[in-house]
Amino acid sequence: MLGSFKIRGALHAVHQILPQARHTGVVAFSSGNHGQAVAYAAKVFGVSATVVMPTTAPRTKVDAVRALGATVELVSPEDRDHYPMRLVERTGAAFVHPFDSRAVIAGHASLGRELVEQVPELATVFVPVSGGGLISGVATAVKALRPTARVIGAEPALAGDAAESFRSGRLVRWPEKDTYRTVADGLRAASLGKLPWQHIRSLVDDIVTVTDEEIVDALRQLTVGAKQIVEPSGAVAVAAALHGRVRWSDGGPAVAILSGGNIDPALAADILAR
Image (tube, rainbow, N blue to C red):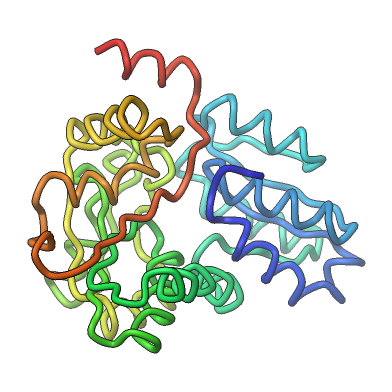
């Protein structure tokens, strides 16, 4: 419907804050997919929504958020984290964080539950990582229902703050000017959220990185070979599996999550033409 997993967390989060949201509306920040999800959830529940997006967001994603009835405010990538909070302070609106939220994480946990229900012998699951909301929810559900399964995070090497955090055992933050280099525009968070980090430290088995070239290769294989429309961010988990970041082929069923398919047509054409 919206082309990404984000609807799971957004619907649950907006429903949880509905008493306030009916009076004040909601605010979110997003590079695209979370914004669409919050805009849709707000529309479903009959509340207003304002989505703060970076000026670097793909035009297709900005247009999609507006088409769902939300107001879009464009800011520089450096202001993306701070401006929404100033907006919340000024308007009193309820804030729907894209990943550092118990309600959002709980919504995403439904994906982990479905994985185990559909693949009871699940051995490994590869999960894209940005702010950590998806992998936090998936890991919580998978480890509760299938404790022997490995949960592997995958992120772009050009936005590898989560992998560095995992290796060092402390939460690190990368400059936005660095994370915004990757083609995976949905995985450019400068740091994991504090709540996801708690889950990741205790539940995730590893976090690996892939190059932009490997992401593009995975996207091309998914499009041409599997006939799946996937954006670069949505292909990162497959890239990690295809390019041998973790040994998995002889250990039982493995799943790579395709997290989003909202790719700009011009970018898709460029990648397929390479």
